[in-house]
Length: 425
Image (cartoon, rainbow, N blue to C red; front, side):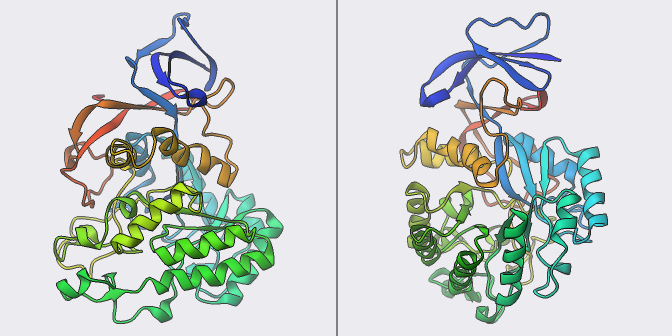
């Protein structure tokens, strides 16, 4: 199958060019001027931005067990809608893929229904507790690419130490949701700061996150493992990660669009669409996250796409689940509110969402180059629109960004040479 993308605005080598991209056999065959498709399909993108397909190392696809929230098919469709061509699915499903047999069943679901490339995490421990380690070698053989208990912190330092030693031996990453349960008091639902007191809602201290990161980076130093930290939210966490990197510890970290764009002061009321874990923190935390991205302390941007049903997200923050969706709006929100406001460059945004995630996890994607897989995203930087429930392809619409003005919406997404999303189709 041959596909020719005409008049693509590319940033190859950080130099803006208008080029054609010829795709054949699922790979990029040629990039140049006035290329011919030899009778294949032609899509003229009319000088819209064309970049490597985005990579999201943190999504929740909810299947098996929670298909009313999302499925692999709908979650991957949402990813395609957002320009993502590779996504990494968290294992807090039911049953969790903590045995080779359970992992193989999920791999078959991915093969049968996913529209984009899906890489599956395995749990660090059986049943996502803090006790018995999973069989890493067997799970890797069954398709796991890394290990995480995302959704909960590993409470036992001994368990984490053993898991890191095994992961280092197997040359895979330990990916951590950092949260010390002993520092959670009173069922916190938002950041313990200013706004929770104004709303009379129980708070969550930043210490739950930063102290566990401090523990884990020293364990990572002792074991030599690649240790990756999910959804960093607090300035103290950024400080610990910065010092760990200076010490030569093999640590990487991610930040979400919602933590970059919102703080506790943006929470208008007891509104469940602003409930996520970790929570939206103070303005100083928000500023530290952006600073951490800019100086290399934080390596990548990941969405933590976390769909929930409308019924689950109604009512008070107290009693409702944590999490918001993010796959479909990440690039456009960050382009509109960080690039267009000159806080970051377009090149930096693309790096943090393509090249850097591939480098962190050793994926052979994330490049727009001859011979590379034809995983490509195209964005319309000029057309302005609003985020709308009507255009969401996820099963869920739990996001506080509905109604926000954006530029840079997705125009076209291609995976392995096949169009999986095109605006208006």
